[in-house]
Image (cartoon, rainbow over all chains, first blue to last red; front, side):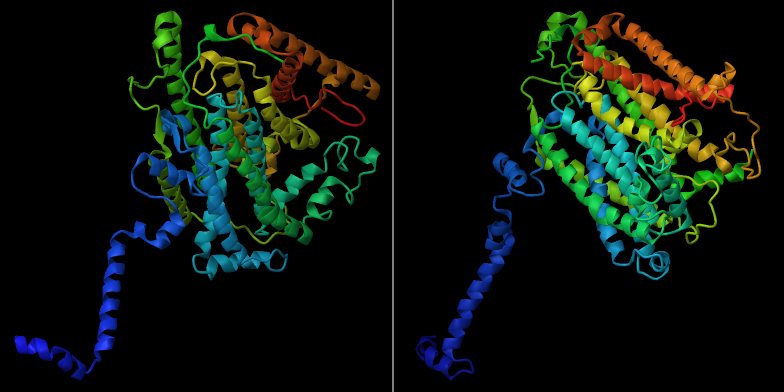
Length: 301
Length: 311
């Protein structure tokens, strides 16, 4: 044993790997071990800390911070009324509508890759999408059904907000924003109707924009329209269609309204809507019931 | 009974949402009704016992002193949101795999679809085209609906019922909204989908849609019944008829609103502008079913005829 110890270094030097390299290797191995140790606690790594900024243990403070310091979650308050999570009260329709909007944006963007808004191409693109594009049919179906579902969930959301009297002070303005959002949801769905350029969309839009002809003052067939100089070539229907018939310009206009203009407006209004939910004191309830005998005289000014 | 046609309409992929609302709206109405009844019972109980009203936590759910009033958003709310997103995704995926979005023939301006129907959510407005001219049904009504919805918070002077389901404290508001939403909007969607056949003719449920069928009806205008023939006479007559309707309906509503109880209290709190706005929208809304009825019962097309517009 003693011999071995004294000759050890010489022996090593005589080996294939020089001792200097071997030392280096040992250092690296120690470092690798250290790195592997951090895998057990990923939240201690610089990478993790740089992304998430705060601790994610189950302490009160961390739970609050995990919501407050996240750009996607901070729409929420850190804490909410214990009864506000009751599904029977909220029905969750507002949140589901927003989720459907995200689904529609996602599938819509994918659909845009396969679609040309021209009379020559549009219908063929849909046929192609349904027969040749991988998952194309699924994509189109999901976009369509999510749109229908969103109309229903927005209606139900409004129904719930009305039934719980949630539009009352101080949420009056947010109710109005919600009504505008409802209108834009319907318009978004309607403008998408024309895009496949099939008989269904064509006639629905022909009938729909036909009504614009009858707009009072601004339509060629509307009350007082002709007296104000409205013709099929300058009235409000012409502006909607980019022509006097539903043709290529109408298709392009529907496309731009559907894919860019209305989603942008909707998104801005959504931001306002969500922001006001927070600023007006979070969701309205379930609030404690008030009694008729407790009505206070109103101070108008 | 034409079961096949009925099945064809009901199972058309684009009509699935209508089948869905046939279940969803009754279900959620029931859910709301149940909670409203529970709250109303609590309100009665607290109203009868002022001492209890001082100490009660005023919700129908259990509560014990010392329980936390608030919970953390993470995880108590966000896990629900996550689950909701998951469930919706599953429903959408199954729906998208099993049912194909409709695609008709290439658009053809020379081949009119019969019946040419608007998307299902606009069928209520299309239904109104039967009873009103396009400028009313297609332009004025949608505008009034939007503005009418937006003024609701500003004309509802009832301070009660904010943030909880109740029927007792908001009888009129809820009845009005349900009438507008369920009868004048959702029911019209159902009529437009299931009962309106070729030529937008009203077929009873299950009757074969015959494209050659022409119902015999001679429509008259209200002034005709009074043998008024000149345009000036018709214009003046119509203006008087509509004016009388507004006055009559307004007076009747006023009587209802100011009669007694909570309604009278709410009326006290309203400004003149609030009250007149409420009256205008209510009277306009009630005019719809009235016009539908006089058309269906007496074949009356217009009430008011002028050189510029007809109502």
